Amino acid sequence: MQIIREPRVTVIARQEFVYPEHINWESDSDVPGEVVAEFAGRLCYLSFGENAGLEGGHKSIPGRTSNEAYLANILQVKHGSVLEHAVWTLLIEGVSRSLTHELIRHRAGFGFSQVSQRYVDESDIAFVLPPEIHEGSRGFEIWSAACEQTLEGYRELLEELAEQVGDSGPATMRKKRARQAARSVLPNAAETKIVVTGNARAWRHFMEMRGSGSADMEIRRLSGHVLRSMHQEAPHIFGDMHLVPSADGVDTVESLHAKV
Image (tube, rainbow, N blue to C red):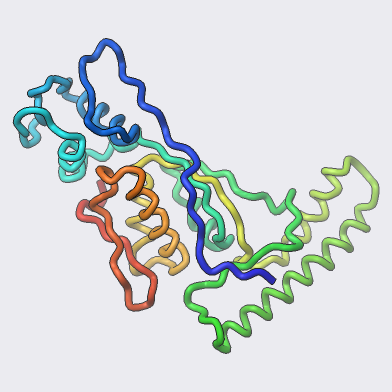
């Protein structure tokens, strides 16, 4: 039986910014997500001139305003709507069904595509070890035994249901009928994979909510992995968010500018 101890987060898509030819402006950032957020913010006040600074009642910065300074001001004044134009798509693997049940509750600003247990044979599925359960403990023995028992039950049930369905109907439908019933015995710890597309504001909200000390430890751990990826992708948007060590061993996520 395969046991997974850490999630895997991979950035699989990021957007491209196309400069409009009729607007004489250029950002000093080469990160499309940062550029589109800056452009959207500047459009609100038509502040594309070299000496425009930050208009609309914001603090004025003389001369050319860097993308970093502009977005820092956006975060400070909580003009979060411009961050909704910056989008990233992540492939998230090595997480449990229990985690994705919570993850997909974040509907605003997100899109999800997840492995289907109706169509995929899970006879060799892995299980995600909850951070609260430590290897070598009595709890780990109970957990692993339960996972092995449910996996064996799934395999036996799938075989029985496949015989019960027989040769009636198309092959794909026959397999689906057996697998959709057999999956009922799989536990929340069953590993799954999911593609998640979200805008920067939504990703910030996810990490603030699920990275808090009161969040489930597995999804809090995932929040840390997502933040590390976002630090690499767009430090001017996510740089104010940081990881803080926790007594339980899973870092929390804290932000200098919450609820942007």
